[in-house]
Length: 229
View 1 (cartoon, rainbow, N blue to C red):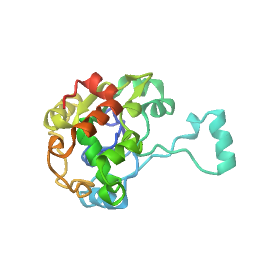
View 2: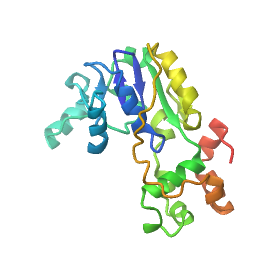
View 3: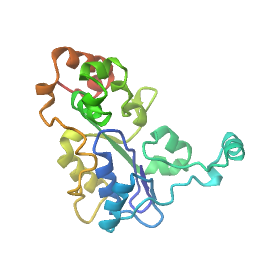
């Protein structure tokens, strides 16, 4: 997750949508006062080697604490933090209203059939689940965090939800929206890209039953974004 005061945007990081690669790219335009949440040590090293800003300013200011937050602090002795896959509604709770209202808020979504395959391999693949069908029936497929991170009451609360499948157009539009002096580009490094063993198109991997099960789990996303199998 990134909150950039320099370019006035908030990036909500969903799961299995090239979120870390996007974070690394966006870190390249961040300023000293911007909020950047931590990523894995390996990915942070990539940001460091690229001379981009790494995790910074992610502790939530005491001035934003609620009475309950203060009670938790006294009990657990742990400060509140903005974190990697934090929901938009939680971000909104801990920033000034005018920041949420005036900054460009965006995130990414992904074709559910392709996303589940990526999630399956990230979760261990055949080493833990005999098939994608077993993975779906276990309930794990529906645990990938996406829609609920950028919506409230079943309605997206961000300015724009881009599709991973339209990345080039998305990067061009983000460049325009943020009025950047040069095009935003993803790093050649692809975070977690080696976890998916089967690189074939999802239609070549999924059985009809598996495709149907995924459609049931992600019916909301499929309808809202008009995804087609």
